[in-house]
Image (cartoon, rainbow, N blue to C red; front, side, top):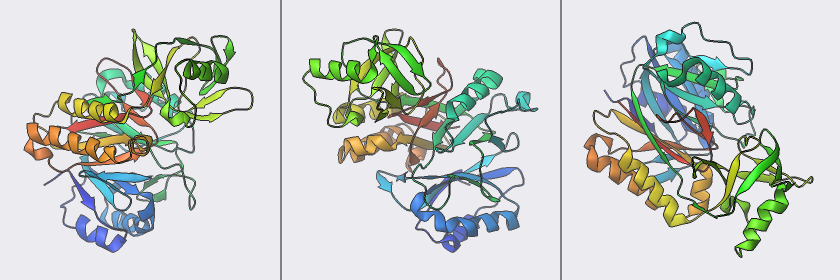
Length: 358
């Protein structure tokens, strides 16, 4: 029985008809990643899960990945064997009493875009669990009109900051972003979480725009020129700029610590697509049971028509090395979460994360 699949359209009864074909076991959970446009189907599925006794966790996303296409309707699902109870995450998160029971498992993390506690909770989880687990995750829909949360369980909308599903499976991951770096060095001389106030002892905007001007670049869309946090002489983490403040600061889609070394990055569509192909070629696929792609919603907007090429290259690289990975499912997110083997659990921006379940 497959551990993942696709639900077409936005009709709850049709979704249930497909889910009924699965023989659910007592310790299994349905991880449901749904397009925002299909949220009307969810109440019927919640009722089905309660009646059936199936544990359920999920989130809304602005769009999904189905094969080599972006889907604005439907849902992808994963059938996971639980290693521990579903864990709702809150700002004052206490240590799970079963922390030692989840070693050598995989955590699937979903976060509410409206709460702003993602990075704090990732730090807490990493402090508790370190590299005893594998991990992949995503931040869900931000543009919410009918609810103030993107998260849900079988009991309906969930007001937690995040949901952690610990599954009894393994996971291999890789990631890519594909931006080029301008040579100028920017030091964060004053910052408050995701609000950069000063770079190189200037207002953050003045320093940022000065770098662009020095290279003949015009700030028509700062989405094309994110910031990169430099670690060990190379960019290791991308930070999207989402707002310019009246005090001359920059608001980023993730925290930027004081004294961090930054580079201004330049979006190049072909390089971004190539980085996704390289990530797909790098990830381990032996004994694969399925794959989940967490790709940034902004990448699809930046790349335009080339984004389809990116998805095609991911699928081809995975399928060529393991024919079981012919079906490709995933989400377009507002933040990508991964625990690299040589890094820490953290929130990424404008990044593609490839997870292969084993």
